[in-house]
Image 1 (tube, one colour):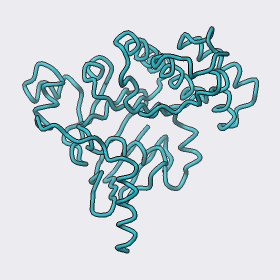
Image 2 (image 1 turned 180 degrees about the vertical axis):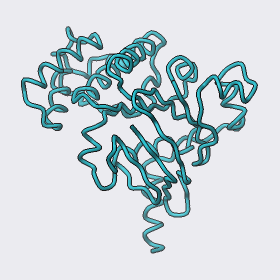
Image 3 (image 1 turned 45 degrees about the vertical axis):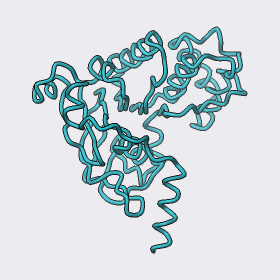
Image 4 (image 1 turned 60 degrees about the horizontal axis):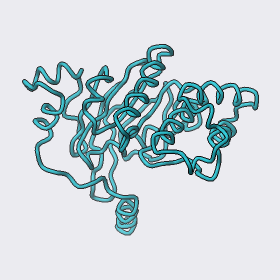
Length: 262
């Protein structure tokens, strides 16, 4: 479902992703892990057509994200790390607007919205403004919205960041049910390694722009002699605390610097 070969991305002199290769079969829950600034979000942005790679090749559902952006965008749904709902709209209106952007006819939008809001247990709140929702409710709505056009792939960038354990479990229950029932392929990043152990079929760990291991969680624990995935992760990536991912402003400055050099 996802094929990546020698994928690279540079911002001026800084190499955020360095010749990364991996594949994600259909119907797999794939965890993409790494310390802050390792290249996870940059890789997702390239796969989802938001960022052009410096080098390498990729295919998403058989299409090239650089040359076939429309086909690729139709094939996936995404839940961003940062909030992306319009809080001045209701839950239904947020969903409906998303469906319009994807060209879904009104009858299909309404049918899918009703089904998905029921799935994430927000059907009774569909006419309320999102600004009055809790953080967990907003996240559940973002998951429902990402599934509205019935994608084959779901990208999740830190989907449960800052949520309480009950909401985290509920969101993963939804995702695993869809994965098992509809063979939905899931590509996710998270720092909650307990979630990875419970949910992921396969994981890749990226550090300093390069993949250092790509295997099942149990195999990675066995190879490192670790009792938990968290212990294995620290052994593989070190104990040094990393800075946060470069901000959009940092990336912009790097791009400007690069343009001036050219």
